[in-house]
Amino acid sequence: MPEPRGRPEEWMQKLTAAARSFADKLRGQAGVDVRDILDPEGEAVASLVEVEGSAGAAALVLPMDLITFETWILGHIGDRDELDLDVNVHRDIWFGFGAWIGEALRHRHGGFWLFPADDPHAWHFGFSKILLEIAPHAFAEKLLRAGPGLGRRMLSEIERIREQHDAAAAEDGGKPKDRYAPQHYARLHTVPLAQWLVLDQAALAELWGKKSAKDLRARVAADAKRLPPQNAPIIAKIDEALSKLDGDKPAGEQVQERGLYEAVAQIVALRRATAPVAIDIMEKVVLPALHMGVPDKFPPLGADDIDGLKKGTDLFAVMVDVVPYAHAAEEGGFLGAFKTEDMSTPYPDRRDLELGRGDWVAVNPGRLRPMLDRFDANRFLLAFEKFVQYVGAQPGVPRIADASRALAESSARAILDIKAAVQAAAGEGKVLVFRMLPPPA
Image 1 (tube, rainbow, N blue to C red):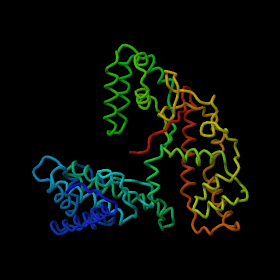
Image 2: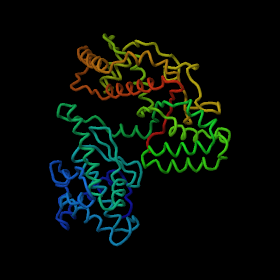
Image 3: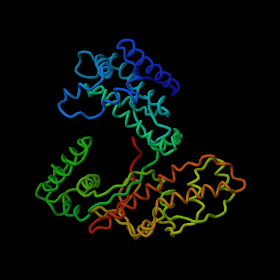
Image 4: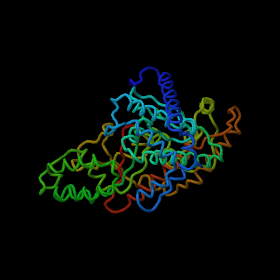
């Protein structure tokens, strides 16, 4: 099959046709209905339970439909050693498999395909009820290259997604709500992310600036064993860079490359890291919400506020904008919280800092600690619910049938994450670092 090109509408037609063809061929040629395989109450899903004993014994618990499904798919690879997308038969089964995965999830959970490029590997699928993005064709290729066992691996991932939807539905009282649209996922690929790190600066300074490069390399190798296998290529590059140094001298005397220093720091000195948050949400919502505190009364809404509500502005964003701060912000300061003297370089070279190019900046956690110590997530969310009621009672405000708590809850989680990082940075020799990450690829 030639690589699809054209408008997203044309690509959607190709996807739906390929998914339907995949399911029809599987039913006609192998007698397997893929809908039964995905049935949460069916044998295939039930077979995911771990079985003690040998791999052979584990294989015996797989239902025949799942074994047939896997055999049929791998049979299309033929007598070749592995998947080759330059072979038409291979490419057809891969494209149909990926299309079916995405379409099956779309029909089950709701969501939409996202087309950032012509290559199907780059096509993503975003869910409307949970904020999760997958790449069905990249997943399909990984499964096909993995060979035997692909059926169980596929079911495990699809079940994990279903469980997340079930959890969201339970929080919504049994009726899952659509919270995310394509623009939410578009933001993930265009807006840089903000993250807080806690480093053991004392240990890092010792390893980088005093211990020999040979000792540092050994420490990196030892600590890297705790990391997931997917980090292996990065670890190999770090090891290669360190191997080129004079092993008897400290690395800090031989190299000034900040990227290597950062990579080493995250392996040997990282003590805590917060979940990345879009920088605009961090700057315009999360930290302002922290300064806002937990209000017990609300100011009158202005004409601009009411106009924003009519245009669909999130209620929590309106609350953060209109409620006076309980804690004074640093006007014109970094992130509205830090003065110049609260910031320093975490790098041993002591040169200039530029966040725009990705430099890390060490900040004084004492600026946030008083606010975080008083933060109570439950009271915070209760205050938002009261604000929703307050807004609903105001004249001229459009009726709000179902106000979303998503942004308020996300902000509360982000603040609790920062609180844990600030607490971890309280130890001797620890430093709180802020960094920006590029949008996900």
